[in-house]
Image (cartoon, rainbow, N blue to C red; front, top):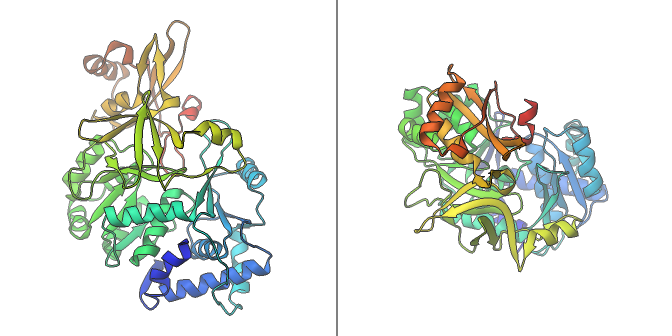
Length: 460
């Protein structure tokens, strides 16, 4: 079964129901079906066929959804490009993916005008569940980014897990502010909306100043965010936060570790325990805190149904129907990533006796200082407990004696001296874990999903 057949639970069975709100306009599922069929016909006339790649460099917009659904219906492979990427990064993806069509925002008026003249019948294309549906390019923290090939089955297995485990249904009202070019917004957000038949309001982007107003106007029950968004939501006044907490059902966080301090402050203010989970571009969702049961701060929870997890040498390995088949045209990288059907995530993790997993950082972020292993997240979590500290990141820098030593990069809420932070760290952490230097910044370098780009810290 392919994604189109699963989306028909809404596009066909709920065609008269309100489906999507975007920038003051409301569309039914029937509207979404018709628009995407018109777009599919338009793409076919441009020569696109099953297996071809469609590259898009677009912000959140209605046409992004039209194009994605059109690609799914045609068996075309959808390749979204991060809108923060610039010419050099875009050229790399275009060279690697070799798309038959590449669309930017300035192309949309012409595309829509052309598509609106089409009858809008469903394309007669048969697509197998194992066929590629998308290529999601990794953020490329080392070297050039690689394209993870995700099939219809990968996306379907992921969405079915989330609908079941997070109890997402047609009665939900879903506020989505995440970018659709990322697997979090696309693979979780768009698919859960289309398969559940809930009503979704899509935002072009998350805007801190407008956040409370969007919540209070739309009154959602479901929200997906990243840690930096939850930090911003803590600025909402107490009375409004309580009102929002009253109609919300579930807040989910992912794409980067959620500090335990933010978890606690959010619960105190909104009356909700954020559900933290763990996923990757290559695997979609793997592990999640339970909807019913303990949502344990600092952990990402328990493996989702069908997902097998092992820790080997401290590294987390995965196997399941959600795991991608390999990297686009990167046979060597694919071989290196898999062993015996297991995918090496590169993430360092621990598991408790009762099965809750805790991420300790990327294997590549591990600092080895004088023969001791240092996990930056442990130091970061401690620094974030300090009332003067708003954000913190720890990275290793070369040292002629110890090989590497930790350096802390800190964004402050209010002034505090470096020696005061050093003294507090000394009282709480082993001596080899102490940051050898504190660098104060106005902000940490992050990617579009809020992950700190540690390779850029030395340039800050």
